[in-house]
Image (cartoon, rainbow, N blue to C red; front, side, top):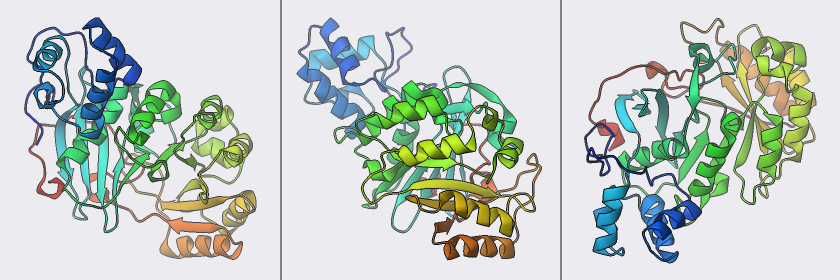
Length: 368
């Protein structure tokens, strides 16, 4: 259980310290320990405690000498983001509201399923892209998250979830555009996929982007990469420009060309996410155009019926239009799935995350 306090746990004691160790990579930890006169191998030990074992205090790091543990507790913090509120859905979904050190707030979603557990994490407080169908963009943008704030979302959810053998999936599909916060996001991904870190298999981690092309090209050069999902949501430039202002800078044609070059894992596919908006992008003609765009590539289409909110100026598609859209894609031999909405009653579904204030609450029974 997370400890109480203004920083949501850890060993912060009110004294001025040099910084939070949680979020640092091996090289940075080596630098911290070198200042304390410690050998480099101590950094690996500390790294494992921080990310693989995810302990909440220096005292628990039993293979570090007592003097070193005491010194670290005097000079550095060890903390995760503070949970301001937890909300539970009737379907078992749990939405977390985190309040960060500067007062910014972000949301994270835990989705327990029969065969796996999924955490949907944020990389920005808000989002600057202003996609017309997404509540996060409508709510506005505050700032990029730091690496420890990204990793901390995962740590808190894993710490509170029931101890089960089901694998973890991480989807970088929460608040914000991850490739607009490239350095912190990729630093977090490296720790998440590291066998000595969170040990999430790359095939179990998916990054979703609208297609920030310079950053996507950089991501392709990473030695270990997550799965890729492209937020498409339209079948042509004119429609995408209406729904997603980013089309003015990075065109649908160029984004899809880059996605085709992405070095996907063996046997994998690029996912194209497509929010279905009633009467806007859900017709037979749209389905045929989408099928033509993705046909012949190692790709699948994930259809997302709009999750409504009062501020979103669109309507969900009808059940018949969803079925018809699926049939067109399937007939064209395009792999297609329909995302089942989760957490709608607590505004935790895709496109519904938005920053708000909340009050501190105890962990929900569903999250234990």
